[in-house]
Image: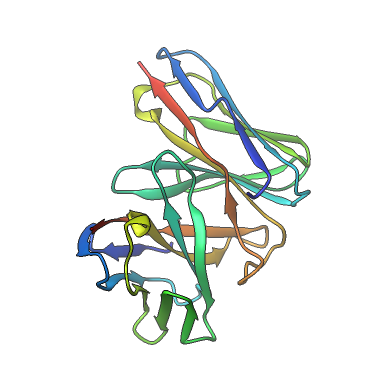
Length: 116
Length: 115
């Protein structure tokens, strides 16, 4: 296992409510990512972090914000959840800037979010 | 940006036969190509990866081939077994500015190995 813990693993929430998903890593890796997975789309990058307090947008960032106050924790927040944000969310980590065989991106177990 | 297409979306094979999944990518700057296997209810797990300066890589029953000129790469699974049943994703990696790596994923292939 890659030393990644996501919480909660399953959540049902109502439209319009705020939701925060947490990713905790024990590997001391610098780079952390949030992806969402939807049928037919593979995984798409929402936001990523390249250090404490250093974050940037991915390709599907609208409606999401992130924060990283410690190396080990990366939080994903849905300020006002919508039904289109029903998805499986995966946190990922990597140790270095350039990924290579043996130095790659590892995924957590996922957080299933349903917005009703 | 990068676009990765993966075919087929589903693949059913008889146990012991081979399975081949193909991906194409659009960004010639992509230089790293991992393959992930995802079992039901779990996160994607890396099974094999290849860098752009290598044309082929093998690991026991799985192999990946890369054709940089044509911008396509393939996963080959030989002597398939029931435990190979899963969803497989290809991906291509490109740099995000100077601050990280973005994996762009294909849409996934659901592989079913029939006993």
